Image (tube, rainbow, N blue to C red; front, side):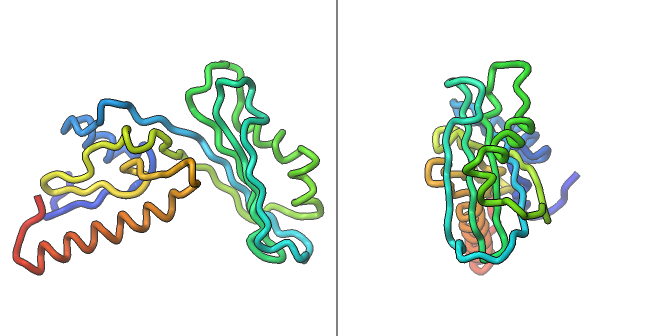
Length: 187
């Protein structure tokens, strides 16, 4: 039970509270949200002059032409490289293993050339909403705002998720501050 004047839900893609609110209040758009699973590892590599270099891939090592996915390599600075792969969760091959695909991706000679002699220093995985504008639920209702990945605010074509999450959080904060400054309840 949540007791607050307003709750800002920012729990990421397919969050428990947000999904319960969307279903319970019938906030879902007519087009269902779709999701991808993304893996990322940070490598510490020997110092080099590749800072700022990036690689984006699409397709391989997905199992067929109907499975969406792609990867990236970002040289964040002279000694840190981020490597990741995102796989659409609507794949149809029951024996497809997204984590095995990530391992295969990293073993490709092009990708391997960026992380050779490096060691993994951090890793993670997350769910990414990919349905776009037509899959957004209602983002505000009496007593609640939904922001960021929880709302589905990801531009997968431009690879903008964090940017939109931060901007939507700022907009939510400014909206609430403006309401309260003028003595209004949000709702």
